[in-house]
Length: 191
Ligand SMILES: [Fe+2]
Image 1: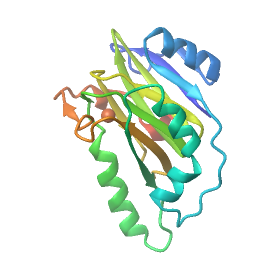
Image 2: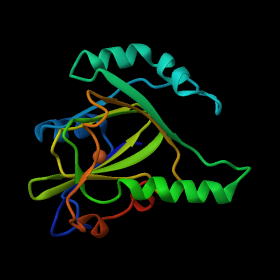
Image 3: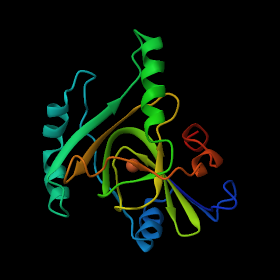
């Protein structure tokens, strides 16, 4: 279930708000200039589904999203364990997880529509960190320039459609701040 924890930066494990109510999550994030919506994402995807298959399955949603911003391009990121090769799965998971685990920004909005699984965004907004556990059906748009990081957990399982205007626009610019190390992980918050 989607979850929002808002905690002062100074007290990473003492949230001032902890909600699993999508209406509350959308309202609290909206008040901070962050778009969060619950959409229907119930198309079954086979393990062999290609990026084209997934984009085709959600073509109407992608078109609806593209109409709301300068998001001319889209692609798909999908991670799931491979039971036939646990060692390769672990290595792939660790590499993928490490990529966006430190605080960074992008020059463009980071728009993610989760169509499978879950992932945890951390948004630095003023004196707070908003921890947004996104699950299947959640749409989150991290505004350009927002300091944030993302934890997919030690056993990632998610599929998200990513929208952007310029593929170079959401290259991560790392802030060099180690703030991410002080907050609860995906494995802790998604449990
Ligand atoms: Fe990012």
